[in-house]
Image (cartoon, rainbow, N blue to C red; front, side):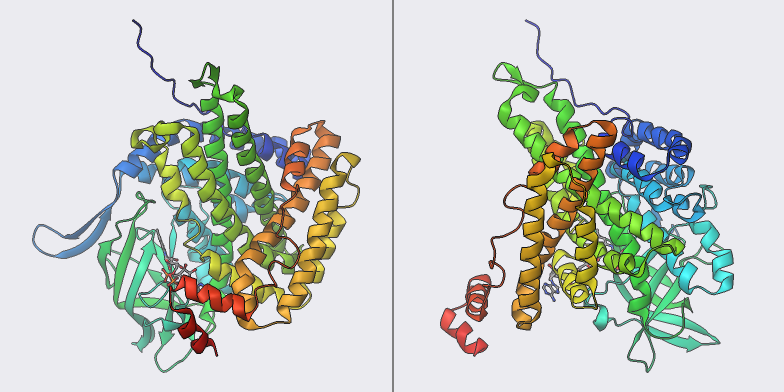
Length: 568
Ligand SMILES: Cc1cc2nc3c(=O)[nH]c(=O)nc-3n(C[C@H](O)[C@H](O)[C@H](O)COP(=O)(O)OP(=O)(O)OC[C@H]3O[C@@H](n4cnc5c(N)ncnc54)[C@H](O)[C@@H]3O)c2cc1C
């Protein structure tokens, strides 16, 4: 009897097969420019489904190794990475993943770059992480760097030549905290006309990079300052940096993440003394949007695999793609992906405008709000989507050599680094308390909901009702008690993300129907903006003081009467 073997899922060209990306680009990039950049996108789409898949698996299997001593006992602290990981560097440079944003060859250079990153990331074994920090460092140096740094370092960071392209790290986290860096213990001492850093950095990814931006406290100063560190000297030796060990991580296994000891590391002060956190925020804004772009890249990859598998796998006499409940599962994944996609690419568009000085004041304020929103929302969406995708492949989804479990493991880092969900939710709250942000946002969203066709009228109506509700909740919350405000911050940020994304999907669906005759975005928009978009009116603000007391008792599992005493 002929034995059964299941056909594995296959990927086609990741650009050609991506209806959502292609439609977005058609709408937002003028025809002649799109025609010019499409061959590059298509080439990367082919690489991402071809050679990069094997390289990513190989890089994941051959994790980096730390060699601390040479044969004669000399300390060398070398991180050895696989040829596959090095190949990811080469591909990133060749495809201009960072460079595209800085060449600014056309008005939508950031959107173009995000499209490349989105195609590159899911097949990159997380080489997208060093690229994010490289891009962030280039932007910081563009804004804050002195002329020699802009002349000598930035061209390396944005190079298309694999041999001259450098990457950069971002060392913020210490043992005392990653979210709260106020406990930073690293000290910068003035020695012989230069600064030297003494301290420990607890999580440093991309430790094979040529340079890093980091925070340290100049001796006798209370404030943190921003420094640039070159990791190696002219002879290739570590610049008074010891690599203590590499982290043993759940995912991102190809990416070296180390603990470092700075033992008098020469460092260059960036942008003058103090305000280090504010200056590194420029880098964080970029890395957060990279994170969001990578999240939607993963979501799209998972969907491509699950969809293809559904057309190959039979159960109960039919293909999975013919089973109503499986179809619903895939459709929900698609709807979640489309909303997330539009949120991220809208943010990329605003970032691009901000960088070339064409963003309005309102757009700059919206970008400030959208950056944490897009990061926190898409990261959570990506984790749940990856989990669902694994289930869509049944047992095969849980087996390592299918290459699928890595999707879940690697997605799980997205809500943690570059600001956790809670920390970013509090940031959103901070932004909302700022001047006119809400007014700007609601004006922008309202304008985008004009001229929506009748087929989307119900979805539009739901959104407008949700917007009103959020406005009401916010005005009550922002006038209220701090603890209550903080306790509601995450739900509020999630609701706001859903509503902003809803406006964007409706707007795009209206365009796509009129310009491409495509009903599919309309179906997604109707579902995204269906009922349950946000919590029922008053659900957030009903979190009174007694609610918080009860939360405390069950969260900390403490006796309610003792908790009540501590709140009294
Ligand atoms: C694979 C990997 C690579 C990394 N690479 C780097 C790197 O290259 N450079 C770097 O600087 N860092 C890096 N990090 C560190 C990462 O940025 C931090 O782990 C992250 O910022 C969280 O900081 P923490 O670990 O100190 O957690 P904490 O800040 O202690 O947070 C613990 C929990 O408390 C919550 N929390 C904290 N404050 C509040 C609050 N006020 N209200 C409500 N909840 C709160 C958080 O949301 C979180 O759930 C990396 C981490 C990982 C996993």
